Every structure is written in structure tokens, then in C-alpha cells.
Length: 412
Image (cartoon, rainbow, N blue to C red; front, side):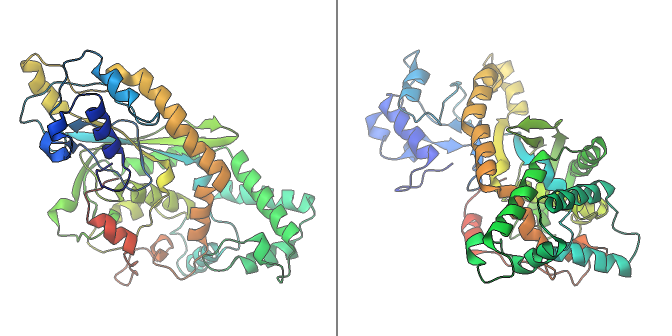
């Protein structure tokens, strides 16, 4: 969310709607800074927002000004309400905390496919250092059932071995590009279809869900999150962040796929922080690493943590606990989204949740991410094996896209 002409942005659309609704004068319509326009949170590229706060000087003479503003906005952008504050109010600086939600299919926590590069690496290191990484009977049973279903559909073990060979390191198997491989396009398509169906039919166990909840609880409190963002060192004071609470919902079945909702309530967040927090837990569970890998990531040793897909992340709302107590003493209304909860839930279902569920069903976004992670044997993520985090742990280079985002003040 930002004003970035000539690019089309949410802030740009909002500002234009304020002008068209008469809430900003013509004299101030050429520059948002003239109206002291500011937003509470700026999210990563591809991240949704159900609730955000902007502060600015507005003309609010009409009682129906909110309705007029919304008439000049696209359907997927809504203004829920307007609150009067004092002149010194700055929504970003006075925001006490923020609540994010991350939606993820439960199959994301299944172990890597047997025979994949990282599954082989995990087994190899486990033989060197037994008793560190954990066995996963639930995951073993899942993959045994997949193999049984493939066999029932006429896919042989030799076919599966050939399929594994043509997967390639870090590459998705494309049916059309494997005409010269040992497998035909029809067999590749059959394997992918059956495996995909099995993932969507997976239902998480109570024990696995509880383990996920315990892992997310490890983030609560004040920790050094230098490994969960970009461009910050261990000694950088700004890497210290306070997480108020992390909760994981009961599973919810949507269009045949089971989903979990993770709520993250923190004082503030850095670039990519939440996506890296989610990936760290998911990979710890998937790879059978000890939960201590998560707390070790708060330590001085720099490690590379991948970003979970942006698709599942949304800013739920900024929170103004301390400032609202001050407003109370002046007899002013609190800055809160509570009066709009019903409208917001309807909006989230229609414009955010449905898009997330549809995109995942169509593109297999989460499977693509985790399959990519599983396809590397020699990678900067070797610390998930029994070797753990060591002084020789490899670092991942910062991409050009990430360098660009570091120039802004994105979070999440």
C-alpha cells in the first residue's frame, strides 16, 4: 500500500476517491503530502490487507462521506469508517501493534516425498548423527498410501524412480518438456494428478496440529529476529521484536482442501518476517528437526530462512491500545475495527479468502514452494538436518527484488 505514480496503487486509488468525494480540497489534490497522508502499515508485494489505517486532514462536512468515498473506489477497496483525532496523530508512529493472518494448507506440514533430494539428505545425515531428527510415522503412512494408489493406477516403482530422476534439482517436472525421458507425458500427468489429489485429501492429526501450535508459541515474547528479515545483523537493536501472541486455528475444509489459519499479533514486523516465521515452523515439522532449531535462529549465527508464499498472508488490522486509552480521556471514539467486523468478514471471504483458495487450487502454490525446497540436496538449509546450525552454515544471496523492497518500509 503506497502512493507511487504512475503505478496504480491502493493509496493512490484512496487519495483519488477522497478528492472525488470532496473530502480533500482541489488545492490539495495534487500532492498527498499537503493533506499529511500516512498509512499505518505497508505490506510486502502480493500480501493482502483486510484492515489498515490511514491518517490525513479530511473535509467531513457530509454525513454520508464514507459512502461517497466508496462510490469512487473499486469493489476490492473499501473505507470502513472515519474517526476524528487530534492534530498530532500519526497512524504509523502511534500504532501499538499489528495483527496478521496466514492461511496455509495442512498438507504443507507433511514430510518430503521419499526419494526427493532433501529426503535423501536427511536420511544420510541421520545415519551419521542418529537420534537428532525425528521419525514421522504419520508422514510415512501418507506416502505409503500414495504409492499404493499409484500402483493401483498402473504406475510401477520403475516409473516412480524415472519420475524422480527427471524432476531435476530445483525444477518442476513439465509434461511437455519430457518427451525424450524414460516416461511419457501421460504417465507424468497421472503421477502428478494422483499425488495432488492425495495432498488435498490429507487431514492433519491432532498430534501434528498440537506440535505446530507449540512451535509457533516459541516466537512469543521478545526475540532477535535478524535471521527472519534481510539486511540486519545480530547486533542491530532494531532486530529485537516483541510478539504478543500466535495462535493456530482448528482445520477448516475449503473446496476439498484442509486449511489452517495462523494469527500473529506483534508489536511490529520487518520485511518478510512473518513469511520466514511460517516457513521456519513448516520446515522444522516437515524435516523432523528439533523444535530448538526455531529458538536457535534467534542466536548470533546467520542462517538463510526461505519465505513462505505471499499468497497466504494478510494484514488483519493495526491496533491502538495505548492511544485509545488517551482518546477515552478526551471523550473521543476509539480507533478500532470492532464496529465493522461483520462487513470485514464478508469482504475477506469475497475478495481475499476466495482468491487465496482459488489461486492455490489452480496453481498449487504451496506444493510448488515446498517441492522446490525438497529438490535441493546441497543447500543453505542443511541446518534442518541432524547437523544443525553451525559456523559453516551457508548464506543465501539477497535477490534484486529483495534489494528493491529493502529501500521501502514494508513489513510482514
